[in-house]
Amino acid sequence: MRHFLSKDWIPWKLVRRRHATFDLDPLIALMGAYEHLLGTHPVTDLAVRNIPPDPGGCLRCGVCCSFMRPGPVSVRTFDRWQKECSPVADFFQTAGRGGRPSHVCWYFNRVRLRMCPLMLRNVRDGRAFCSVHHLGPKHRHPACSGYRPNPPLCEATAYSLGD
Image 1 (cartoon, helix red, strand yellow):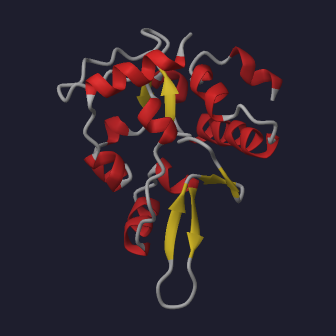
Image 2: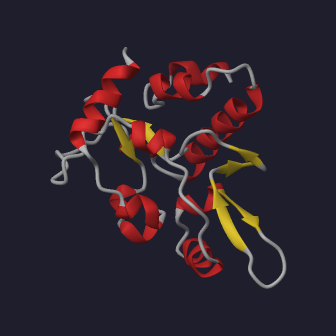
């Protein structure tokens, strides 16, 4: 886990906030998720891209993404993600039994993650970004695609995180 300390694309401020307790399992699972992303997704290339301002007003503070717990998705949605090799599918776990299974996020190696593993830090401007946003809405959880930022609230929440 030590080799991750030098990774400037990890949103460390938000990781510290979400992992303030002494339960190491979710933190170790998050680092495993990052390791997995490094092997399957162009993380380092994405982290240095110029990201234009969001027309919807998102400040890219990362608070909503680190605290949001999108609900389950249908088998159909999950299967589509797998068929299209969408990285989001890697962080879901099957829930429910019998005739109504669904898939819930955010998991890695059967451990519930405390934040979205797809949210990273842009090296150029220091702000958070979604590493699958550029793939389009069909590669994101429907709750993420439908989320609309509330900049005044975002500013207050981001300010409370401090540096």
